[in-house]
Length: 172
Image 1 (cartoon, rainbow, N blue to C red):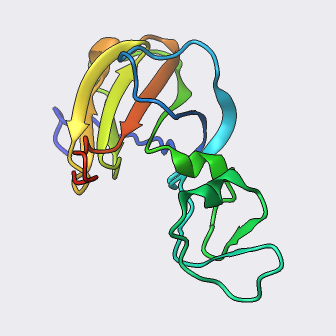
Image 2: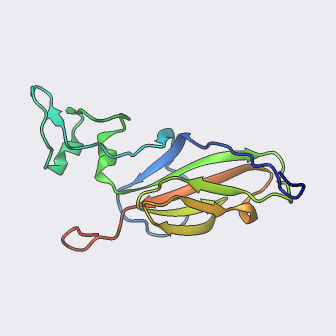
Image 3: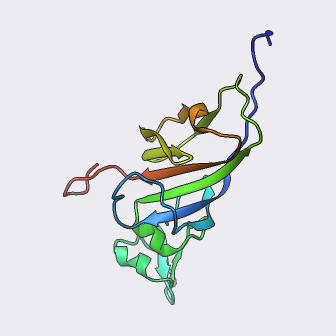
């Protein structure tokens, strides 16, 4: 390391985040103040249940669920449900997620970056209530310098995750 290079410090933000499943399209791009389900969403994960192997109570075999009403009941068993989120969350294609990060002291000699390895497919990132960027690229990581929006102490990171816009036939 040369004298001008600064050491890189990484903090993993994986873990339990707050979530608000959005059953209607976002009316605006402002971080909600209330309605958060605290510590209910595990990052990394996905909140929808896979419908490739589902059975209702009393059934002996699993099948593909073609009826979206499967998410209106709690008596369905999803074979490949790794996270156990409420079935109702599968009826939405967007959600707000957030967590706080404490930075004891902002070092003016450093740049602070957030890296998301995958946010599918659209993500609108906010830091301390300020819209930082809109990312539309489900296959590439999102990396952004968030230094201008950070402060010493607690910092709120919020992300509105949305599906692609779709036409009348459901195509992206």
